Amino acid sequence: MSIRLRLTLLYSVILALTLVTFSVVVYSVQSQSTLNEQKHELAGWARRAADRLQFSDQLQFDDRRPDEPPWPAFPLDRSETPTSTFGFRTPYVQHLYIDGEVIFRSDNLGEITLPLSDRGMDALRDGKPWAETAVVEGERLLIHTEPVVIAGQVTQAVQVARLLGERDQHLRTLGQNLLIASGVVTAAAFGMGWILSGLVLRPIHRITQTARTIGEERDLSRRVRYAGPNDEIGQLATTFNAMLAQLQVAYQQVQRSLQQQRRFVADVSHELRTPLTTIRGNLGLLRRGPSVSAEEKDDILDDMVDESDRLIRLVNDLLALAHAESERSLENETIRVKPLIEDICRQARLLEPDRTIACADLAEIAAVGDRDALKQVLLILMDNALKHTGGTVTVTTAVADKHVAIRVYDDGPGIDPDVLPHVFERFYRGEEARARPGLGLGLPIAKALVEAQDGAITVDSEAGQGSVITVTLPLGSDNTSEAFSQDQER
Image 1: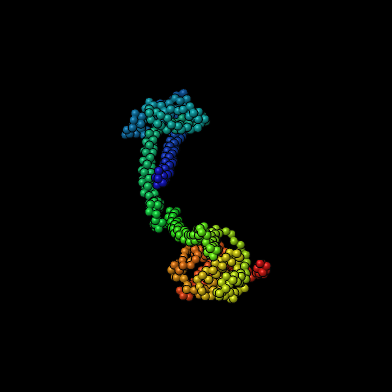
Image 2: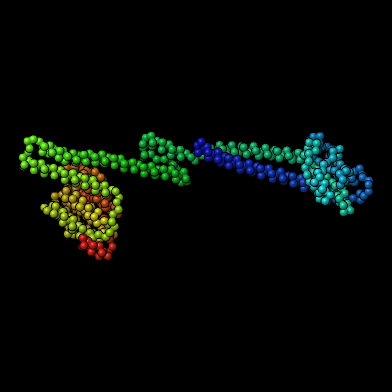
């Protein structure tokens, strides 16, 4: 069963129950109201008749019982045609003694005697009026009995009755009309509810259709079109579109990652094949008979050592990338930047004694981060700069907007504008970089480590003007004496 049908049935049932309850209340109120009205009317007639009997001068208290009362009590309308054998609409009147003997009947009663129940007789003897319904000659009557007090005693009674058939017929008609009206209203409400629920749920159908289309076409660029109010349906459509946008970004990232992994596998395969092939070939030479000369053997061993070192560097780069991306927790300490950079520059000069490495313009500032991670980042940047230039490499520091900025300059050929946006992508290497050793993992590793320290790294370059890589880290507190003493102890 669809949600549209369930909703329509739900509020149709609620409406039907409401209408039934309303109809029952209206019917009950109308029934009781008309009954009370007739009781009140009959009680008034009976009291007036009893009063006339009590104060009549012609009334005698002896054993004689007159054939008729001295008053014209509700004469029969001769023009009235009864609705049945016993069906006059005018009131029926009966005058009787307390023992039940009838003194007088109205003309429309004929020979019929109005009944009085035992409970009514008991109430009459106590001097209390009594009203009840009874069926006479197949007709329902409302009978009011009023006691007549003579000389302080209840000796007689007056009964006034009216047919309830007309009232009952009106009530039956009212009940039928209420039932028919409730059915018609419920049916109309069901139809209108079905249409309205279809309009309200149309955005959900669009969402379902969009999801089905996306699943069939694998097109995450599709969106749900919704122009209604920002209600629950609107929020659902907005949330669904936002989810699709996030899925599209994630899917694109996965696609890029897959492309990078394929490129990585190709690069790693190429990098591994060369040293492994060389090592395998040299091993074959060593096993060849007759044995090679001592000089050739030394050359073969040197080649094998070089290729083994190359393999070790490759494995180390892969491990460094894995650690950088593992979101491992780093230390959050205050670091004196100047001594750290001077130490890195000293190591670089030892490895490249013929290169000019300028680290003189360094400020006495402190940054907040992880010392070992920052040192690894600066070593990567220094190695990258030395690879891409044959001239001077310069390192500077400065304070900018509550951050420490460390810049590494080189005066090399610069980076191609098409390559610049991709320099921090894992395994990405431009055409010129492919001519140099490496896998393109240095800058991605540096970026991951810097961001893990709540910092940022950027690259600016112009063709023929060299490049500058800037690392920014949170600025340390002014009181860095404890940190300075720790650096000096190291």
